[in-house]
Length: 121
Length: 487
Image 1 (tube, each protein chain N blue to C red):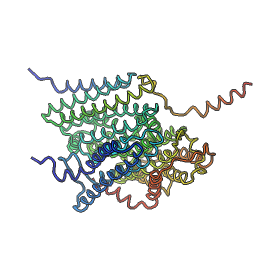
Image 2 (cartoon, chains in turn purple, brown):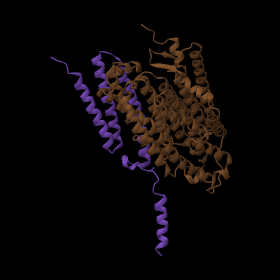
Image 3 (tube, rainbow over the protein chains, first blue to last red):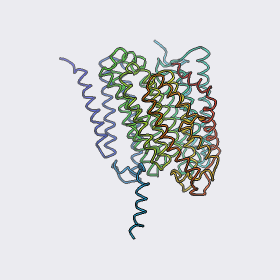
Image 4 (cartoon, each protein chain N blue to C red):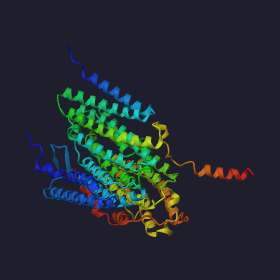
Protein backbone atom coordinates (compact mmCIF):
# COMPACT_ATOMS: atom_id res chain seq x y z
CA UNK A 1 0.00 0.00 0.00
CA UNK A 2 1.44 3.34 -1.02
CA UNK A 3 1.44 6.44 1.13
CA UNK A 4 -0.29 9.59 -0.14
CA UNK A 5 2.29 11.37 -2.32
CA UNK A 6 3.67 14.77 -1.31
CA UNK A 7 2.21 16.49 -4.36
CA UNK A 8 -1.35 15.80 -3.20
CA UNK A 9 -0.75 17.58 0.08
CA UNK A 10 0.85 20.49 -1.71
CA UNK A 11 -2.05 20.73 -4.16
CA UNK A 12 -4.51 20.72 -1.29
CA UNK A 13 -2.44 23.40 0.43
CA UNK A 14 -2.42 25.50 -2.75
CA UNK A 15 -6.18 25.10 -3.18
CA UNK A 16 -6.86 26.07 0.44
CA UNK A 17 -4.59 29.07 0.12
CA UNK A 18 -6.34 30.21 -3.04
CA UNK A 19 -9.74 29.77 -1.40
CA UNK A 20 -8.55 31.84 1.53
CA UNK A 21 -7.24 34.59 -0.73
CA UNK A 22 -10.48 34.55 -2.75
CA UNK A 23 -12.51 34.74 0.45
CA UNK A 24 -10.46 37.71 1.58
CA UNK A 25 -11.06 39.52 -1.69
CA UNK A 26 -14.75 38.74 -2.24
CA UNK A 27 -16.36 38.42 1.19
CA UNK A 28 -17.83 41.54 2.76
CA UNK A 29 -18.22 40.58 6.41
CA UNK A 30 -15.16 41.44 8.49
CA UNK A 31 -15.34 38.23 10.54
CA UNK A 32 -15.51 36.11 7.39
CA UNK A 33 -12.61 38.03 5.88
CA UNK A 34 -10.66 37.37 9.04
CA UNK A 35 -11.48 33.66 8.86
CA UNK A 36 -10.23 33.62 5.28
CA UNK A 37 -6.86 34.88 6.50
CA UNK A 38 -6.76 32.07 9.05
CA UNK A 39 -7.50 29.64 6.23
CA UNK A 40 -4.54 31.00 4.27
CA UNK A 41 -2.24 30.56 7.26
CA UNK A 42 -3.48 27.01 7.81
CA UNK A 43 -2.83 26.20 4.17
CA UNK A 44 0.73 27.35 4.76
CA UNK A 45 0.91 25.13 7.85
CA UNK A 46 -0.17 22.14 5.82
CA UNK A 47 2.51 22.83 3.26
CA UNK A 48 5.19 23.19 5.95
CA UNK A 49 4.12 19.97 7.65
CA UNK A 50 4.10 17.97 4.46
CA UNK A 51 7.53 19.24 3.41
CA UNK A 52 8.80 18.55 6.90
CA UNK A 53 7.47 15.00 6.75
CA UNK A 54 8.92 14.43 3.29
CA UNK A 55 12.38 15.67 4.31
CA UNK A 56 12.22 13.90 7.68
CA UNK A 57 13.35 17.19 9.18
CA UNK A 58 11.80 19.01 12.08
CA UNK A 59 12.29 22.70 11.08
CA UNK A 60 9.03 22.81 9.16
CA UNK A 61 7.04 21.63 12.13
CA UNK A 62 8.70 24.25 14.31
CA UNK A 63 7.77 26.90 11.78
CA UNK A 64 4.19 25.64 11.92
CA UNK A 65 4.08 26.20 15.66
CA UNK A 66 5.27 29.75 15.19
CA UNK A 67 2.68 30.37 12.49
CA UNK A 68 0.01 29.07 14.85
CA UNK A 69 1.22 31.35 17.63
CA UNK A 70 1.21 34.31 15.29
CA UNK A 71 -2.27 33.42 14.03
CA UNK A 72 -3.52 33.28 17.61
CA UNK A 73 -1.95 36.62 18.48
CA UNK A 74 -3.33 38.14 15.31
CA UNK A 75 -6.79 36.82 16.16
CA UNK A 76 -6.59 38.35 19.63
CA UNK A 77 -5.59 41.77 18.32
CA UNK A 78 -7.90 41.50 15.33
CA UNK A 79 -11.02 40.61 17.29
CA UNK A 80 -10.30 43.46 19.71
CA UNK A 81 -10.10 45.88 16.80
CA UNK A 82 -13.24 44.42 15.22
CA UNK A 83 -14.99 44.98 18.55
CA UNK A 84 -14.05 48.67 18.69
CA UNK A 85 -15.14 49.10 15.07
CA UNK A 86 -18.49 47.51 15.85
CA UNK A 87 -18.96 49.65 18.97
CA UNK A 88 -18.38 52.84 17.00
CA UNK A 89 -20.34 51.98 13.87
CA UNK A 90 -22.74 49.13 14.57
CA UNK A 91 -21.80 47.39 11.37
CA UNK A 92 -19.45 44.64 10.31
CA UNK A 93 -19.71 45.25 6.59
CA UNK A 94 -16.37 46.11 5.08
CA UNK A 95 -17.93 48.48 2.54
CA UNK A 96 -19.11 50.73 5.36
CA UNK A 97 -15.55 51.41 6.44
CA UNK A 98 -15.19 54.34 4.09
CA UNK A 99 -14.81 57.48 6.17
CA UNK A 100 -11.43 58.30 4.62
CA UNK A 101 -11.12 59.12 0.95
CA UNK A 102 -8.75 60.67 -1.50
CA UNK A 103 -9.84 64.24 -1.97
CA UNK A 104 -10.03 64.71 -5.69
CA UNK A 105 -13.54 66.15 -5.55
CA UNK A 106 -13.51 69.13 -3.17
CA UNK A 107 -11.71 71.56 -5.50
CA UNK A 108 -14.01 71.49 -8.53
CA UNK A 109 -17.44 70.37 -7.23
CA UNK A 110 -17.37 72.91 -4.43
CA UNK A 111 -16.65 75.71 -6.83
CA UNK A 112 -19.37 74.39 -9.12
CA UNK A 113 -21.91 74.24 -6.32
CA UNK A 114 -20.95 77.71 -5.20
CA UNK A 115 -21.30 79.21 -8.65
CA UNK A 116 -24.51 77.33 -9.43
CA UNK A 117 -26.77 79.04 -6.85
CA UNK A 118 -25.36 82.41 -7.88
CA UNK A 119 -26.19 81.89 -11.53
CA UNK A 120 -29.74 80.60 -10.88
CA UNK A 121 -31.27 83.78 -9.49
CA UNK B 1 26.48 18.83 19.68
CA UNK B 2 26.74 22.55 19.89
CA UNK B 3 25.59 24.14 23.09
CA UNK B 4 22.29 25.91 23.00
CA UNK B 5 22.85 29.32 24.50
CA UNK B 6 26.47 30.41 24.43
CA UNK B 7 28.01 33.64 25.66
CA UNK B 8 28.31 34.90 22.10
CA UNK B 9 24.63 34.12 21.45
CA UNK B 10 23.82 36.22 24.47
CA UNK B 11 26.08 39.04 23.30
CA UNK B 12 24.29 39.20 19.96
CA UNK B 13 20.88 39.13 21.56
CA UNK B 14 21.41 41.82 24.24
CA UNK B 15 19.77 44.70 22.32
CA UNK B 16 16.60 42.65 21.84
CA UNK B 17 16.66 41.50 25.46
CA UNK B 18 16.97 45.11 26.65
CA UNK B 19 14.10 46.24 24.44
CA UNK B 20 11.84 43.41 25.55
CA UNK B 21 12.76 43.91 29.23
CA UNK B 22 12.15 47.62 29.18
CA UNK B 23 9.00 47.13 27.12
CA UNK B 24 7.62 44.91 29.86
CA UNK B 25 8.99 47.22 32.56
CA UNK B 26 7.03 50.10 31.06
CA UNK B 27 3.85 48.03 31.24
CA UNK B 28 4.51 47.28 34.94
CA UNK B 29 5.51 50.81 35.91
CA UNK B 30 2.37 52.07 34.23
CA UNK B 31 0.46 50.41 37.07
CA UNK B 32 2.51 52.30 39.68
CA UNK B 33 2.45 55.84 38.35
CA UNK B 34 -0.45 58.24 38.59
CA UNK B 35 -2.24 58.95 35.31
CA UNK B 36 -0.89 62.52 35.39
CA UNK B 37 2.69 61.29 35.66
CA UNK B 38 2.56 58.99 32.65
CA UNK B 39 4.89 61.27 30.76
CA UNK B 40 7.71 60.11 33.01
CA UNK B 41 7.44 56.73 31.29
CA UNK B 42 9.29 58.44 28.45
CA UNK B 43 12.31 58.49 30.77
CA UNK B 44 12.04 54.72 31.12
CA UNK B 45 11.91 54.40 27.35
CA UNK B 46 15.00 56.60 27.12
CA UNK B 47 16.79 54.42 29.67
CA UNK B 48 15.91 51.35 27.65
CA UNK B 49 17.25 52.98 24.50
CA UNK B 50 20.48 53.93 26.28
CA UNK B 51 21.04 50.30 27.29
CA UNK B 52 20.21 49.16 23.76
CA UNK B 53 22.54 51.78 22.32
CA UNK B 54 25.37 50.69 24.60
CA UNK B 55 24.85 47.09 23.54
CA UNK B 56 24.97 48.15 19.89
CA UNK B 57 28.16 50.13 20.44
CA UNK B 58 29.75 47.14 22.17
CA UNK B 59 28.80 44.89 19.26
CA UNK B 60 30.19 47.41 16.80
CA UNK B 61 33.44 47.67 18.76
CA UNK B 62 33.71 43.90 19.08
CA UNK B 63 33.32 43.48 15.33
CA UNK B 64 35.91 46.10 14.44
CA UNK B 65 38.36 45.03 17.18
CA UNK B 66 38.39 41.45 15.90
CA UNK B 67 38.25 42.42 12.26
CA UNK B 68 35.06 40.46 11.80
CA UNK B 69 32.44 41.40 9.24
CA UNK B 70 29.70 39.50 11.06
CA UNK B 71 28.96 37.56 14.18
CA UNK B 72 26.44 34.74 13.88
CA UNK B 73 24.48 33.35 16.79
CA UNK B 74 21.98 30.58 17.46
CA UNK B 75 23.41 28.32 14.75
CA UNK B 76 23.16 31.10 12.21
CA UNK B 77 19.60 32.24 12.74
CA UNK B 78 20.70 35.66 13.98
CA UNK B 79 23.59 37.63 12.55
CA UNK B 80 24.99 40.91 13.75
CA UNK B 81 26.85 42.72 11.00
CA UNK B 82 27.33 46.29 9.88
CA UNK B 83 23.99 46.13 8.11
CA UNK B 84 22.06 45.10 11.23
CA UNK B 85 23.81 47.66 13.43
CA UNK B 86 23.24 50.47 10.94
CA UNK B 87 19.51 49.78 10.71
CA UNK B 88 19.22 49.32 14.46
CA UNK B 89 20.58 52.82 15.01
CA UNK B 90 17.86 54.13 12.71
CA UNK B 91 15.17 52.26 14.66
CA UNK B 92 16.61 53.50 17.93
CA UNK B 93 16.60 57.13 16.83
CA UNK B 94 13.09 56.89 15.41
CA UNK B 95 11.67 55.23 18.51
CA UNK B 96 13.29 57.72 20.83
CA UNK B 97 12.09 60.72 18.84
CA UNK B 98 8.54 59.37 18.60
CA UNK B 99 8.44 58.56 22.33
CA UNK B 100 9.55 62.13 23.14
CA UNK B 101 6.81 63.80 21.13
CA UNK B 102 4.02 61.40 22.08
CA UNK B 103 3.15 62.38 25.64
CA UNK B 104 1.78 65.79 24.76
CA UNK B 105 -0.08 64.53 21.72
CA UNK B 106 -1.70 61.64 23.58
CA UNK B 107 -2.70 63.96 26.42
CA UNK B 108 -4.45 66.24 23.98
CA UNK B 109 -6.10 63.30 22.23
CA UNK B 110 -7.25 62.02 25.64
CA UNK B 111 -5.79 58.54 25.20
CA UNK B 112 -2.61 58.67 27.24
CA UNK B 113 -1.95 55.07 28.31
CA UNK B 114 1.33 53.53 29.38
CA UNK B 115 0.87 50.62 26.99
CA UNK B 116 1.75 52.95 24.15
CA UNK B 117 5.37 53.20 25.25
CA UNK B 118 5.55 49.47 25.87
CA UNK B 119 4.31 48.85 22.35
CA UNK B 120 6.90 51.26 20.94
CA UNK B 121 9.72 49.29 22.56
CA UNK B 122 8.30 45.90 21.64
CA UNK B 123 7.83 47.00 18.04
CA UNK B 124 11.47 48.06 18.02
CA UNK B 125 12.37 44.63 19.39
CA UNK B 126 10.64 43.11 16.36
CA UNK B 127 12.60 45.46 14.11
CA UNK B 128 15.84 44.24 15.66
CA UNK B 129 15.01 40.73 14.49
CA UNK B 130 14.06 41.99 11.05
CA UNK B 131 17.43 43.67 10.59
CA UNK B 132 19.53 40.93 12.21
CA UNK B 133 17.59 37.78 11.34
CA UNK B 134 19.11 35.32 8.90
CA UNK B 135 16.55 32.59 9.31
CA UNK B 136 13.04 32.50 7.87
CA UNK B 137 11.50 31.79 11.28
CA UNK B 138 13.36 34.63 13.01
CA UNK B 139 12.42 37.06 10.27
CA UNK B 140 8.78 36.01 10.31
CA UNK B 141 8.48 36.33 14.07
CA UNK B 142 10.25 39.70 14.01
CA UNK B 143 7.91 40.95 11.33
CA UNK B 144 4.80 39.85 13.18
CA UNK B 145 6.02 41.21 16.50
CA UNK B 146 6.49 44.59 14.85
CA UNK B 147 3.23 44.43 12.89
CA UNK B 148 1.07 43.37 15.85
CA UNK B 149 2.36 46.30 17.90
CA UNK B 150 1.58 48.62 15.02
CA UNK B 151 -1.97 47.30 14.58
CA UNK B 152 -2.69 48.23 18.17
CA UNK B 153 -0.94 51.60 17.98
CA UNK B 154 -2.74 52.62 14.79
CA UNK B 155 -6.05 51.96 16.52
CA UNK B 156 -4.95 53.64 19.71
CA UNK B 157 -7.65 56.34 19.65
CA UNK B 158 -10.35 53.87 20.56
CA UNK B 159 -13.28 56.22 20.39
CA UNK B 160 -12.37 57.79 17.09
CA UNK B 161 -13.95 56.22 14.03
CA UNK B 162 -11.10 56.99 11.68
CA UNK B 163 -8.54 55.41 13.99
CA UNK B 164 -10.58 52.18 14.29
CA UNK B 165 -11.05 52.07 10.58
CA UNK B 166 -7.36 52.62 9.92
CA UNK B 167 -6.43 49.83 12.34
CA UNK B 168 -8.97 47.51 10.74
CA UNK B 169 -7.68 48.07 7.23
CA UNK B 170 -4.06 47.87 8.28
CA UNK B 171 -4.68 44.67 10.22
CA UNK B 172 -6.62 42.91 7.46
CA UNK B 173 -4.21 43.83 4.68
CA UNK B 174 -1.17 43.27 6.87
CA UNK B 175 -2.33 39.79 7.86
CA UNK B 176 -3.25 39.03 4.25
CA UNK B 177 0.22 40.01 3.07
CA UNK B 178 1.84 37.97 5.87
CA UNK B 179 -0.10 35.02 4.54
CA UNK B 180 1.49 35.45 1.13
CA UNK B 181 4.90 36.00 2.62
CA UNK B 182 4.79 32.89 4.75
CA UNK B 183 3.47 30.86 1.82
CA UNK B 184 6.53 31.99 -0.09
CA UNK B 185 8.64 30.93 2.88
CA UNK B 186 7.05 27.49 2.85
CA UNK B 187 7.95 27.10 -0.83
CA UNK B 188 11.52 28.22 -0.03
CA UNK B 189 11.61 25.61 2.70
CA UNK B 190 10.34 23.08 0.21
CA UNK B 191 13.13 24.01 -2.21
CA UNK B 192 15.93 23.84 0.32
CA UNK B 193 14.78 21.73 3.24
CA UNK B 194 16.14 24.36 5.57
CA UNK B 195 15.00 27.66 7.01
CA UNK B 196 18.45 29.27 7.02
CA UNK B 197 18.77 32.04 4.45
CA UNK B 198 22.20 30.81 3.36
CA UNK B 199 20.91 27.28 2.69
CA UNK B 200 17.92 28.63 0.81
CA UNK B 201 20.25 30.81 -1.27
CA UNK B 202 22.46 27.90 -2.28
CA UNK B 203 19.44 25.70 -3.05
CA UNK B 204 17.93 28.40 -5.27
CA UNK B 205 21.34 29.00 -6.81
CA UNK B 206 21.54 25.36 -7.88
CA UNK B 207 18.35 25.73 -9.91
CA UNK B 208 17.54 27.67 -13.07
CA UNK B 209 16.54 31.28 -12.38
CA UNK B 210 13.26 30.75 -14.27
CA UNK B 211 12.46 27.50 -12.48
CA UNK B 212 8.67 27.61 -11.85
CA UNK B 213 9.00 26.64 -8.20
CA UNK B 214 11.60 29.34 -7.59
CA UNK B 215 9.33 31.74 -9.43
CA UNK B 216 6.39 30.81 -7.19
CA UNK B 217 8.50 31.36 -4.09
CA UNK B 218 9.79 34.66 -5.48
CA UNK B 219 6.38 36.03 -6.45
CA UNK B 220 4.57 35.19 -3.22
CA UNK B 221 7.43 36.46 -1.05
CA UNK B 222 7.67 39.62 -3.13
CA UNK B 223 3.94 40.28 -2.78
CA UNK B 224 4.26 40.04 0.99
CA UNK B 225 7.31 42.28 1.11
CA UNK B 226 5.87 44.92 -1.22
CA UNK B 227 2.80 45.19 0.99
CA UNK B 228 5.02 45.97 3.94
CA UNK B 229 6.90 48.78 2.21
CA UNK B 230 3.59 49.99 0.69
CA UNK B 231 4.66 49.71 -2.94
CA UNK B 232 2.07 49.95 -5.69
CA UNK B 233 -0.12 47.85 -6.38
CA UNK B 234 -0.18 46.93 -2.69
CA UNK B 235 -0.27 50.44 -1.28
CA UNK B 236 -4.01 50.82 -0.64
CA UNK B 237 -3.72 50.46 3.11
CA UNK B 238 -1.08 53.16 3.53
CA UNK B 239 -3.02 56.43 3.00
CA UNK B 240 -5.92 55.28 5.17
CA UNK B 241 -3.73 53.86 7.92
CA UNK B 242 -1.57 57.00 7.92
CA UNK B 243 -4.54 59.34 8.01
CA UNK B 244 -6.51 57.51 10.68
CA UNK B 245 -3.66 56.71 13.05
CA UNK B 246 -2.59 59.14 15.77
CA UNK B 247 -0.04 61.42 14.06
CA UNK B 248 2.82 60.27 16.28
CA UNK B 249 2.09 56.68 15.27
CA UNK B 250 1.85 57.75 11.63
CA UNK B 251 5.32 59.24 11.94
CA UNK B 252 6.64 56.04 13.49
CA UNK B 253 4.84 53.84 10.99
CA UNK B 254 6.06 55.77 7.97
CA UNK B 255 9.65 55.76 9.14
CA UNK B 256 10.58 52.85 11.39
CA UNK B 257 8.24 50.30 9.90
CA UNK B 258 9.35 51.23 6.40
CA UNK B 259 13.03 51.11 7.35
CA UNK B 260 12.60 47.71 9.00
CA UNK B 261 10.66 46.34 6.06
CA UNK B 262 13.31 47.69 3.72
CA UNK B 263 16.03 45.94 5.75
CA UNK B 264 13.97 42.76 5.59
CA UNK B 265 13.49 43.16 1.85
CA UNK B 266 17.21 43.66 1.30
CA UNK B 267 18.01 40.60 3.42
CA UNK B 268 15.66 38.47 1.29
CA UNK B 269 16.52 39.87 -2.13
CA UNK B 270 20.28 40.01 -1.59
CA UNK B 271 20.23 36.66 0.21
CA UNK B 272 18.06 33.75 -0.89
CA UNK B 273 16.62 35.43 -3.96
CA UNK B 274 19.90 36.88 -5.25
CA UNK B 275 20.61 33.89 -7.58
CA UNK B 276 17.21 34.36 -9.25
CA UNK B 277 17.93 38.00 -9.98
CA UNK B 278 16.89 37.93 -13.66
CA UNK B 279 13.41 36.77 -12.70
CA UNK B 280 12.68 39.59 -10.24
CA UNK B 281 14.58 42.51 -11.71
CA UNK B 282 11.92 43.32 -14.31
CA UNK B 283 9.16 42.79 -11.76
CA UNK B 284 10.68 45.22 -9.27
CA UNK B 285 11.39 47.74 -12.04
CA UNK B 286 7.73 47.73 -13.03
CA UNK B 287 6.70 48.03 -9.38
CA UNK B 288 9.14 50.88 -8.77
CA UNK B 289 7.84 52.85 -11.77
CA UNK B 290 4.22 52.23 -10.75
CA UNK B 291 5.01 53.21 -7.15
CA UNK B 292 6.63 56.49 -8.14
CA UNK B 293 3.82 57.25 -10.57
CA UNK B 294 0.91 56.56 -8.23
CA UNK B 295 2.61 58.01 -5.17
CA UNK B 296 3.58 61.27 -6.82
CA UNK B 297 0.45 61.81 -8.92
CA UNK B 298 -2.00 60.94 -6.15
CA UNK B 299 -0.23 63.28 -3.73
CA UNK B 300 -0.95 66.30 -5.94
CA UNK B 301 -4.64 66.53 -5.10
CA UNK B 302 -4.55 65.80 -1.39
CA UNK B 303 -5.79 68.41 1.03
CA UNK B 304 -5.02 66.42 4.13
CA UNK B 305 -1.34 66.83 5.02
CA UNK B 306 -1.04 63.36 6.52
CA UNK B 307 -2.55 61.84 3.40
CA UNK B 308 -0.28 63.91 1.20
CA UNK B 309 2.75 62.77 3.14
CA UNK B 310 1.43 59.20 2.98
CA UNK B 311 1.44 59.29 -0.80
CA UNK B 312 4.82 60.98 -0.75
CA UNK B 313 6.15 58.17 1.44
CA UNK B 314 4.77 55.65 -1.07
CA UNK B 315 6.78 57.38 -3.79
CA UNK B 316 9.89 57.32 -1.58
CA UNK B 317 9.50 53.53 -1.33
CA UNK B 318 9.71 53.52 -5.12
CA UNK B 319 13.01 55.43 -5.05
CA UNK B 320 14.41 53.01 -2.46
CA UNK B 321 13.52 50.06 -4.70
CA UNK B 322 15.52 51.65 -7.54
CA UNK B 323 18.72 51.21 -5.54
CA UNK B 324 18.02 47.51 -5.15
CA UNK B 325 17.26 47.21 -8.88
CA UNK B 326 20.60 48.79 -9.74
CA UNK B 327 22.04 46.26 -7.33
CA UNK B 328 25.68 47.37 -7.39
CA UNK B 329 27.48 48.57 -4.28
CA UNK B 330 26.54 52.19 -4.92
CA UNK B 331 22.91 51.16 -5.19
CA UNK B 332 22.77 49.25 -1.92
CA UNK B 333 24.72 52.00 -0.18
CA UNK B 334 22.24 54.41 -1.76
CA UNK B 335 19.31 52.52 -0.24
CA UNK B 336 20.98 52.58 3.18
CA UNK B 337 21.69 56.31 2.93
CA UNK B 338 18.20 56.97 1.60
CA UNK B 339 16.56 55.12 4.50
CA UNK B 340 18.71 57.05 7.00
CA UNK B 341 17.95 60.40 5.42
CA UNK B 342 14.27 59.61 4.89
CA UNK B 343 13.95 58.72 8.57
CA UNK B 344 14.82 62.17 9.79
CA UNK B 345 13.17 64.29 7.13
CA UNK B 346 9.90 62.37 7.16
CA UNK B 347 9.81 62.21 10.96
CA UNK B 348 10.39 65.95 11.04
CA UNK B 349 7.58 66.69 8.63
CA UNK B 350 5.15 64.60 10.64
CA UNK B 351 6.31 66.17 13.90
CA UNK B 352 5.22 69.57 12.64
CA UNK B 353 1.80 68.04 11.94
CA UNK B 354 1.88 66.67 15.50
CA UNK B 355 2.36 70.22 16.76
CA UNK B 356 -0.72 71.37 14.84
CA UNK B 357 -2.98 69.11 16.92
CA UNK B 358 -4.49 71.13 19.72
CA UNK B 359 -7.57 70.84 21.91
CA UNK B 360 -10.57 70.84 19.54
CA UNK B 361 -8.39 71.37 16.49
CA UNK B 362 -7.46 68.24 14.55
CA UNK B 363 -4.93 70.24 12.52
CA UNK B 364 -4.36 67.83 9.66
CA UNK B 365 -5.71 69.80 6.71
CA UNK B 366 -3.70 72.06 4.47
CA UNK B 367 -5.82 74.96 5.76
CA UNK B 368 -4.59 74.30 9.27
CA UNK B 369 -0.97 74.87 8.34
CA UNK B 370 -1.80 78.10 6.48
CA UNK B 371 0.11 81.14 7.66
CA UNK B 372 2.35 79.08 9.92
CA UNK B 373 5.18 81.53 9.30
CA UNK B 374 3.25 84.28 11.09
CA UNK B 375 2.24 82.11 14.01
CA UNK B 376 5.43 80.20 14.56
CA UNK B 377 8.39 81.09 12.34
CA UNK B 378 10.60 78.41 13.89
CA UNK B 379 8.26 75.53 13.09
CA UNK B 380 7.59 76.95 9.63
CA UNK B 381 11.27 77.19 8.72
CA UNK B 382 11.94 73.69 10.03
CA UNK B 383 9.04 72.39 7.98
CA UNK B 384 10.54 74.17 4.97
CA UNK B 385 13.83 72.32 5.53
CA UNK B 386 12.05 68.96 5.79
CA UNK B 387 10.01 69.59 2.66
CA UNK B 388 13.03 70.74 0.67
CA UNK B 389 14.79 67.60 1.80
CA UNK B 390 11.83 65.39 0.89
CA UNK B 391 11.84 67.00 -2.53
CA UNK B 392 15.58 66.34 -2.80
CA UNK B 393 16.93 69.87 -3.17
CA UNK B 394 20.73 70.18 -2.78
CA UNK B 395 21.88 71.60 0.51
CA UNK B 396 19.64 69.17 2.39
CA UNK B 397 20.04 65.49 3.13
CA UNK B 398 17.30 64.36 0.76
CA UNK B 399 19.50 65.29 -2.19
CA UNK B 400 22.23 62.98 -0.98
CA UNK B 401 19.89 60.00 -0.84
CA UNK B 402 18.56 60.63 -4.32
CA UNK B 403 22.06 61.34 -5.65
CA UNK B 404 23.39 57.87 -4.80
CA UNK B 405 20.27 56.15 -6.12
CA UNK B 406 20.51 58.00 -9.46
CA UNK B 407 24.26 57.47 -9.61
CA UNK B 408 23.81 53.72 -9.20
CA UNK B 409 21.17 53.67 -11.93
CA UNK B 410 23.49 55.46 -14.33
CA UNK B 411 26.40 53.20 -13.39
CA UNK B 412 24.36 50.12 -14.22
CA UNK B 413 22.94 51.67 -17.41
CA UNK B 414 19.32 51.81 -16.25
CA UNK B 415 18.90 55.11 -18.08
CA UNK B 416 15.14 54.87 -18.61
CA UNK B 417 14.53 54.31 -14.92
CA UNK B 418 16.84 57.19 -14.06
CA UNK B 419 15.01 59.59 -16.39
CA UNK B 420 11.60 58.58 -15.04
CA UNK B 421 12.80 58.98 -11.47
CA UNK B 422 14.19 62.45 -12.15
CA UNK B 423 10.98 63.53 -13.87
CA UNK B 424 8.95 62.52 -10.82
CA UNK B 425 11.20 64.61 -8.60
CA UNK B 426 9.82 67.62 -10.47
CA UNK B 427 6.26 66.48 -9.77
CA UNK B 428 7.17 65.99 -6.12
CA UNK B 429 8.49 69.55 -5.86
CA UNK B 430 5.09 70.78 -6.99
CA UNK B 431 3.07 69.14 -4.22
CA UNK B 432 5.61 69.80 -1.48
CA UNK B 433 5.48 73.43 -2.44
CA UNK B 434 1.72 73.43 -2.04
CA UNK B 435 2.44 73.03 1.66
CA UNK B 436 5.19 75.65 1.53
CA UNK B 437 2.86 78.08 -0.24
CA UNK B 438 0.16 77.52 2.36
CA UNK B 439 2.64 78.12 5.18
CA UNK B 440 4.25 81.25 3.78
CA UNK B 441 1.70 83.01 1.60
CA UNK B 442 -1.78 82.27 2.87
CA UNK B 443 -3.29 83.84 5.97
CA UNK B 444 -3.57 81.95 9.20
CA UNK B 445 -6.85 80.15 9.81
CA UNK B 446 -6.72 80.41 13.57
CA UNK B 447 -4.64 82.09 16.24
CA UNK B 448 -4.49 79.20 18.71
CA UNK B 449 -0.82 78.68 19.56
CA UNK B 450 0.80 75.44 18.48
CA UNK B 451 1.07 72.54 20.88
CA UNK B 452 4.60 72.60 22.13
CA UNK B 453 6.48 70.56 24.66
CA UNK B 454 10.10 70.07 25.61
CA UNK B 455 10.13 66.68 23.93
CA UNK B 456 8.66 68.03 20.72
CA UNK B 457 11.14 70.92 20.52
CA UNK B 458 14.09 68.61 21.15
CA UNK B 459 12.83 66.07 18.62
CA UNK B 460 12.22 68.69 15.96
CA UNK B 461 15.61 70.26 16.63
CA UNK B 462 17.38 66.92 16.30
CA UNK B 463 15.54 66.04 13.10
CA UNK B 464 16.21 69.47 11.64
CA UNK B 465 19.89 69.46 12.52
CA UNK B 466 20.36 65.98 11.10
CA UNK B 467 18.40 66.74 7.94
CA UNK B 468 20.61 69.73 7.26
CA UNK B 469 23.73 68.19 8.78
CA UNK B 470 23.72 65.00 6.71
CA UNK B 471 23.30 67.17 3.63
CA UNK B 472 26.13 69.56 4.44
CA UNK B 473 28.63 67.24 6.07
CA UNK B 474 27.79 63.73 4.83
CA UNK B 475 31.15 61.96 5.29
CA UNK B 476 30.57 60.21 8.66
CA UNK B 477 27.12 59.05 7.60
CA UNK B 478 28.40 57.77 4.27
CA UNK B 479 31.05 55.89 6.22
CA UNK B 480 28.33 54.32 8.34
CA UNK B 481 26.39 53.29 5.26
CA UNK B 482 29.59 51.86 3.79
CA UNK B 483 30.08 49.75 6.90
CA UNK B 484 26.55 48.50 6.55
CA UNK B 485 27.56 46.96 3.23
CA UNK B 486 30.10 44.60 4.73
CA UNK B 487 27.86 41.59 4.52
